[in-house]
Length: 254
Image (cartoon, rainbow, N blue to C red; front, side, top):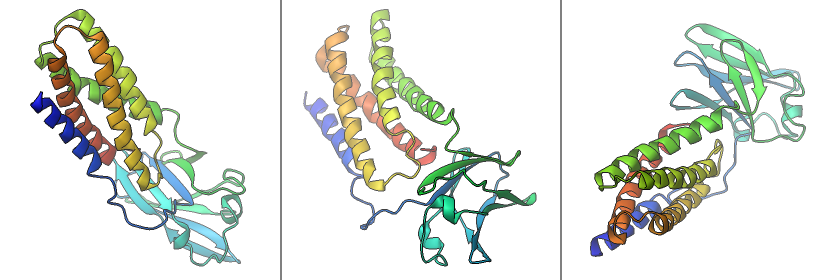
């Protein structure tokens, strides 16, 4: 039991470490975010705005996660604009300028695509066709949720097997419990494209709550082994899947 308590304490410490390391000050989300799909490696993006009869050419901040390149325009970067009335107004006549090894390509931002008082809006641009659409692709969230749940199932299933669980009933309950618990946790952090960094603290709290739910469900439903062995398995499995999820959050799109 002492080992189990030590592992529980370790889980709490791991969950608490990342909290509170963010810079002090109010978080200002980007005014516009563009997700670029299918572009050559090294592609950069700028936005060309129209301001008082002149072009304002501003670089977008780039972030690459796995297969996805994300570009963000922050209000502070457009210092030429003394006032910002909303994306639909301030992006009138604007174009996205793509600079890649293949050359330069301009993609107009159609009037009416952005909201009148819009701010922190997301567009998706397909490099090959030049098609620009509002929001993220419909398949994006289900794919990322499925990847996180699958990773948790593989890791915890491997440890479940090593812990000596062999009954078909135990495995079916394992699948049901983990799909529900890790599915809910993955849905919770889905779509955090421009999230305030302070919300990550909520993720670690949610992770521990999910662990408690999983422990309760296993102790009530899975009776193949003793409670002590079950808790020992759950702590080890959740420590491993937590580490995997932290890596996935760091490297996969949010």
